[in-house]
Amino acid sequence: MRILSLLLLGSAILFTRCNSKEETPMPQADADNGGLFLPEGFGALVVVDSVGPSRHLAVNSNGDIYMKLRITTGDKGNVALRDEDGDGRADVVQRFGDYPNDGAFATEMRIHKGYLYFSSELVIYRQKLTPGKLIPEGKPEVIVRDHHPMQWHNSKVLAFDKEDNLYITFSAPTNACEDWSSIDYYNNGNSSAGVKSMNPCPELNDLGGIWKFDANKLNQSQWEGQRYATGIRSVVGMSWHEEDNSLYAIQHGRDYLHGHAPNHYTPWQNAVLPAEEFMKINKGDDFGWPYTYYDPFKQKRMWAPEYGGDGEKEATGFADPLMGMPAHWAPNDLLFYKGSQFPARYKEGAFVAFHGSTNRGPYPQGGYIVAFIPFENGKPTAKWEVFADGFAGVDVIVDMKEAKYRPMGLSEGPDGSLYISESKQGKVWRVMYTGDPLKFTQASLANMESRKSRSYIKTPDETADSVSPK
Image (cartoon, rainbow, N blue to C red; front, side):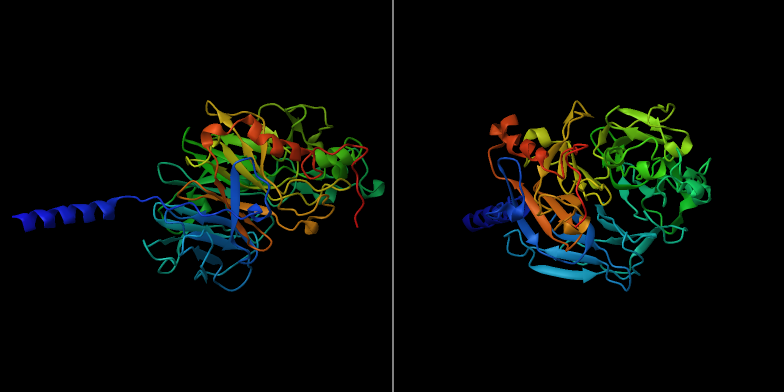
């Protein structure tokens, strides 16, 4: 009887150990935080230095990382990373992907209900993840095909709701649905509207919006989906907010206000207008592209110059964003923080990866940071913060090529760490909170608030901040 009791006790202890979740110790941050500047109490380490030019990433529940590569030919367009010794760094880096690569805008990498979803420019795929195995097995399944030819703004960004619906962006390839035959060549394009646009815009028939699909149905075409929202030029950062069960995205605003209507817009206005729009998207919303743009200073939607606007005519009848973000910063990922590792103020707030501008001349290029938008009572506070800086590596960015890194992808790890990827080399950082979350106060953000004075973050002064190309 004594032997039987000991055996039962030993079995119970073994069962308890096998079924308990032992917390994995947090790895040590790099002494220099991998070159990043972060709020007080945060640290970062470099997970991998370079897997090659890449786009988005996703972290699995066991800590494995999957990344989408920016390659245009061949196969094996994905890469998988695994940390085997618990130091936070990738010990295994393996490429995979039995599908044809079709363009550098191939963007998405998401994990949803045991499947790895990823996109080329024209096709959404998925593969089943097997617990314990790094590389998904079997050939990728096709979920949705895009019937359009290869074109600009071809990123296919994904979001999933609680009912297994899949939301996909079909962005517009043009800046403002231009009609290039309308240019006033005799006036060198310097009339009040040197370029006009098509009205109505034919691109809105099947582009410039977000479509809704069944996340589990194979071989769907765009026509089998339902248009969820329209008037959205280009979105590369989109996410479902589980707290209020709604879709959110950040739109890339249009360009060339001065170039298209130099009588109404100065080069400075060209650099600071229009806003990148942080949007809560409801079914049936129309955000007004290409007929309008959002002015972050006036906090109003304005008629575009190609459609009779002059910088003063307010447009009505369209959906407005929750807030306007700095112009041309290229928001390329959006993540709502769900974890508990970070201080409580970050819970359910939005992180945004700003890839950085390319066309703000004659003013410095802007962006190249990860920002945070706090939420209170389910709504953004309308004031964004610098969360992670140091990617650019230079003080003044005249040309995008001068930036060392360009923040691209965001993903949350199983312990609440934030993973950040960049697009040039495929470097990945893991950001962790190492301080006491109860002692995190507004003063802990002071060092990051001061970074808003840097040339690539602040609003440029119209007369003092212009620069010349090198």
